[in-house]
Length: 442
Image (cartoon, rainbow, N blue to C red; front, side, top):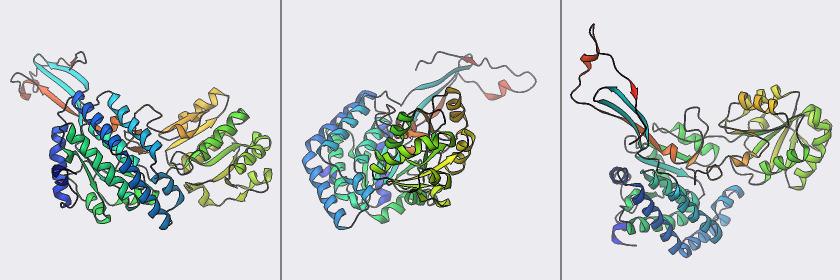
């Protein structure tokens, strides 16, 4: 490790790290798209050059995780083998190919002759990203931060400390090779630093937590810094009376079993009473074959007797495992009411051949993502073409859903005049504004 990289070691007091990152962020904000893309390519090359060390570090983390009995979903996210690393590096390069989100002219308006207003996108400043287990998030988030002109302070879980340290070492090396100050990307490694990071109001502009429900909720409740994230991923699939049975079974299996620990996996299946007797036995058999534990309400258990009885807690639980709650509903309205009562506003889906029913469902369900005849597993920044994502937001205000580059910029107004003063436009002889929209050209 070079001397300049050692200078950014996390042995520095956290406030000093945040101050350094904030200062570098001001420089990043002024870089051209070409300069940022060159830095991202240098990061990708450095990650490739250090691939052996990164994978070896991850093996050590995985070995320790087994000894510590790390939960199965977390272990799956922790593992970073050669194939997964190569895919993540390809994702870094994908970010370089995305349009530059900084400097976009959103508004160009003449207020009066010689008085012109512009609204342009600008970086947020410094991101604080706290995550559990997933070392690949280091690469995704660092690339997105560089592309959007933001500094980033990363805090990984103790189970991934070796992996994250190796990754950030490579990322800093790449930035230095591109003549970008490596203080743009920082890594924290202790539990105490997590809480201290949440107190850095004024130095950190956005906190992005990625982890369990309890973890995200802790972050939301213990900082005054704006938080982008979701505490729960309680997603539903509703199978309508006019659903295609093969589609319904395939979608339900994918949405539950493809990656059960993901926040976009379904936790509850709602099925219309008119199709339940015909479809539910085959669907339950397919789920059982996939090792899914199925719980059902009374109506569902009248159709399939071996289902485990549900309790009220089942409708509010994110299992993050091969467990699924099933409820029979009388109508699409009942399905909508259940989802809007128990859902976490993440992603909801309907299977139906009736476009009017689908449109009604998609209009009335309150969620960041509402899908028709496809799996909830498509709720993902990469699959949306964002290159990668920094997280998923279920809040009402934007950004909402999978958040890529557009969620890492804000905007500022620039007004240029020729000596105008406000009193000219007020009073009994006020001069009127022209308010003439001009072409959206920088």
